[in-house]
Length: 217
Image (cartoon, helix red, strand yellow):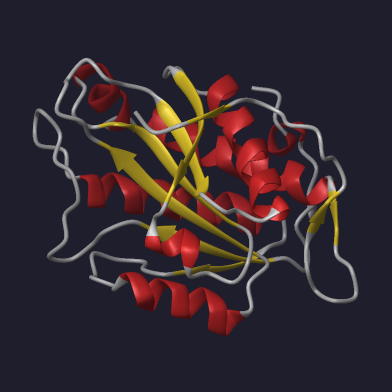
């Protein structure tokens, strides 16, 4: 992998405040894999690895949950908004009624800000390039945590637990770390391509679309 973190550079995220959201938790298990993998468990493990990768680059990281605890959707947004975070990154895994459906996706709000679009495409590019899953690109969705957070936000669907191949990958430590690092590399790229105006609003310096945009199938 040739992402920003793999170059050995340190402190690229110094001064940045990032909220990492491990989807589901507690009584909300999320999707369940074909051999029993619980989405909430995979989400938390990847989110914790992402936290460590981001902190290694100097970021201040706030977790919406750091154990098997239920946190409401509004509660997750409140954590991010009250912290006045720079970005919000939500970690999930997908499921579909057709077990053949597989791959990695990144989601932005249907009316996403330019900063959210920039964050999403940088992370999507790294996930698609660096993970052994099918890279499915960027989708739009009305997810609550994307609509009610006040900073650039992205929701990452690492793989499909309903697909036997994807679930097998998700069960491995190697893949979970690859997923965390790919997201972290995308975060580094995002901040390297943005400036922070006095108003506090993050604006993208690169308006060109990277990757592709699909509608949810």
